[in-house]
Every structure is written in C-alpha cells, then in structure tokens.
Length: 283
Image 1: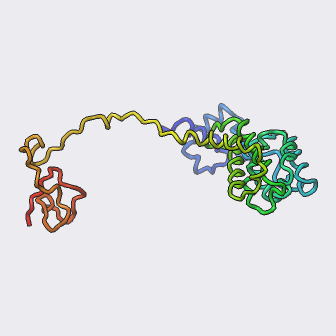
Image 2 (image 1 turned 135 degrees about the vertical axis):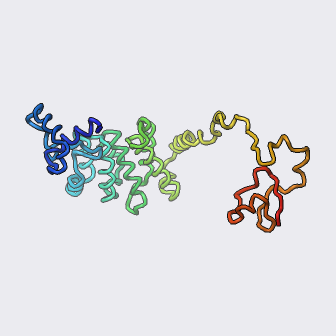
Image 3 (image 1 turned 60 degrees about the horizontal axis):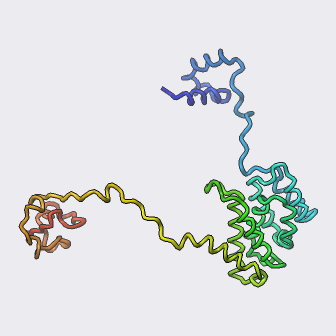
C-alpha cells in the first residue's frame, strides 16, 4: 500500500498531471473532491519558499548605487535594508567588492561604520580578503582591515552549523585571509605596531589545541577479545609438538616449490601464508 504522503502528493499535483497518470487514482481523487470541492491549490501559483541567499537589495541595484554615489552610500543602503544582516548579503558583497575593490578598500573604517551591523562587516571584510591579491586594494594598507576582522572574529559567536556559514564563519575567514596576505607580502606588517601582540595571542589561541595529542579512544570489544586460534587440516596448534614449526618455511611465496594446498589451484597464488604454516613441497 502506498504511504499517505504519496496519495497527498498525487492530490496536490492533480491539477497539472495528465489524465493517463491519474487513471489509477480515480477513486481516491473522487473521494477527495467530495470532501474538498474547491480542489487543491494550483502548484504553479503556490508560493515558493525563499532561498537563504535571497536579499531585498539585489546585486544590480547595489552596483548602480556604487557607480552613482560611491561605496559608502551603497554600504549605508545595505545597513538600512529590512533584511540587513541576512547571510545572502555575503554573496552580494563578495561580488560588489570584486567589481571595484579599490573603492571598497580605500577607507575600511568608514565602510564598516556605514555598514553598522557586525554581520555586514564580517561579510564585507571576507570579500575584501578574497580580493586582497588585486594590486589596487588597500591603498592605505591592510592593517586596519586585519584588526577589524580580529575584533569581529572575537565578538561574533562561533558558527552554529558547520555546513551553513554565518557571520562568525565569515569573520574568521576574513581574519585568516587578511593575515595571510600581510604575512606573505609584508604590506602593513609594520602598521600593526602595538597591536601585533594581540594578533599573535589570537594565533596562539587557535593553534594551542593542536599541540596536544588526541585523546585516546577506549578499546573496542573486538580489540580486547582474545584471538581464537585457527585450526587447519593438521589440527589446532596445541596438538603440535614443541619446536615443530622451527626450521620450517612460513609460506610458499613463489611457484618454484609449490605447497600441497597450492597444487590443487596453482593458477591462483595465495594472498598470504598457509593457514597451518605447514608448506609441504610437491615439486
């Protein structure tokens, strides 16, 4: 019997499915139509759930605002959006910053002030870190962006879902990406000045757990169970005389001297030693 969800799915899609497909469900559909004469809502007109990437301000509108009034005006518009701080703005900011990185990184503190929300600041700094290799970025140096990303990575909560990046995840990406850029290029390293110990402290806090060995796992039942000795054609090992195995080869690894077990199926060499460790040569 079909589960209830299958019947309800057929009822929900019945307005658009062709008649041959609905022939086997005629009694069910007739009963449902008597109970609900208005029928199911049309699937084509049903409202679709919004994606988590949906934003009120579209990318094209933001690009036009940047071209007309500059990056600060666009940042203020993002802060005033009804869904400001939504995760979809991470993608929007990444694309708009990549389109004009010089305009967005000329005055990092001013852009962060215009964005207001720490979530938007984390998205913005992650986008700036992704564009850091462009020659025109950070005309005043990346030190202020590094310190801002460090402050946000400490202030924002840790990501709640490792599979869905949120503002805390983007703040961590921004800080590590910008710091990598400074370390590799040396640009802005001297501008960190008295804030360098705070940067090193954060690095130490992130790497310190990696310096400890992993906790030992408790042994499983299979690991603590005593091994059962295998018995072969010659009987269990306990029946052998003491020292019987000494001086005998443990396995026949080449076909030059085949053992008795290999003789029966010599076309398939054994993957390991014989089970009884007794290799009787036949040729």
